[in-house]
Image (cartoon, rainbow, N blue to C red; front, top):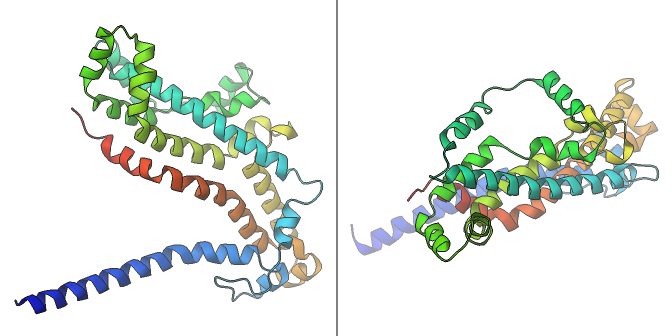
Length: 298
């Protein structure tokens, strides 16, 4: 094959790759753009269908209705942000501390505690024992029910422990020779070196905290101030669907445009998704390196 033919083949290959990547981008972005377009479209017009990536009758009525006077969404949004921030920071720190202990070769009960931790990934007590435990701990109708039960995740601990085991043990030994204790080694040496895997675990925990609503339904729905965004959005969507279930969606939409389930569903999806999408780009590079480097050992 001549140099000219080789260049032609490379150009064709590059063109095919570019076209495939463009197709993947379109397929990936279209559903989200469609949701955004419907969320900013007039509720009555949305019922007609035919909306793709741009709103046909632009309006913010769907969002105005969700955050209208008397709505608990602003308070619920703040509560979701608060539980996500506190739950993520406390969860990452707790998992990292346990992972550090289990990674130490001089820890006598390392294998025993690791086995017990892994067992929890496959065996659970069920919903009723969990509810009884949380009730006996006095966590019902308290903010602590969002934080304490999720402090430790066996999966996250194993990821962090594997990453720590890949850090040369000589770093810890050198620090000990210089007089550093275990606490200082953990905070000054281990944590800074574990930033990629910690960011990965933080993303896992943050997404779980942000999307959680069932714990609100079970444990704190009696306290309005503890209601979370996902739970409030679920109630709004359920209410809108109940309105449309008793009549034809067209006539019901004309009588009560602000309660069109399709339009509200799209607005709810955008509100619930955008905060995570905003945070993800800042953690993406850590996320990729944390998932790959966590499997490398010394």
